[in-house]
Length: 279
Image 1 (cartoon, rainbow, N blue to C red):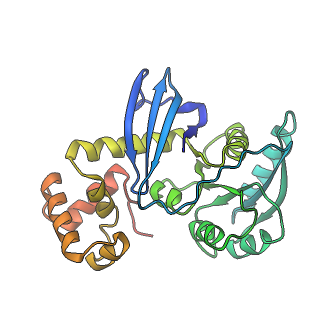
Image 2 (tube, rainbow, N blue to C red; image 1 turned 45 degrees about the vertical axis):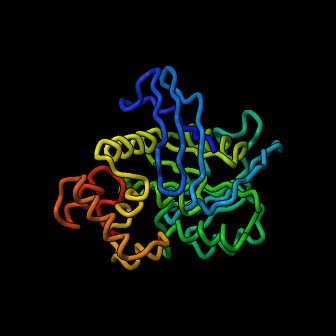
C-alpha cells in the first residue's frame, strides 16, 4: 500500500537521497524512499492490527463523483468552487454529487448516491467524522470501491486514528485548492494507496525517530498510543493480558526515563503520537 503526498513532502525532515525504513503506525508499517525531495518508492506491510480490506480497484472512468461532508458552509462552498473551476480542464473530471453538514445525513445519502470519493471533516457537529468512516466501512454503505479522504483544520488530531478508521488519506484544510483536486484524482485512481499531506508525513517521521531513538518496540508503541486508557482496556484492545500491559508500561517508563503515566503521556503528546488533549 504505497503512500503519496502533495509535492512529495519537500520538508526539512526529509533529506535528498534518504531512506526512512518502517514508519510504524500500529496497524500498518510502510517504507518510504525519497529521491530529490519526492517520494519515488514505498512499501506497506499490514500487521495483525490491520483490519481494513485491501481494495484492488483502479478507477477507469472519465468522471470522479465526489461527496463532501463538512459542518461549515464556507468550507463546503470553497470545495464546490474549487471542483467547478479547477477540475474541469482535463480528465478524469470531478463531479460534485452531493454535500452534507452532518454524519447522519452522510450515511443516509450514500446509501442512494454513487460516490467514488468522500471528503469528510474529522470533527462534525453531530458526531466524529472518524465514526462515520468506520460505519461506512463496517456496514458496507455506499460504493464498495469508495475512497475516503479525511480533512481537518485542527492539527491536534491523531493520524493513527484517522487511518485506522478506514480513511484512505488525510488532508489539512490549510492545503491549496490544487492540492485537494490532486488528492481526489490520485485516491480515485489508487484506492489501495494512502495520501498524506506533507506536514503529516513529516510528523510520522518525527514520531518514528523519537520512538526508535528511545528503543520503543512496535508493541510498546501500541501501548503508549493507548496510555490514557486503563490497563484493562488496553489489554482488551490489544488482545493481551493485563499483566503483560503492566510489563510493557514499566519497560516504556524505563526507556523514556520517566516515572509516571502522566510523564509518559506528555512524551507521547509532545512527539505527536497522541493528541495533546483528550477528545
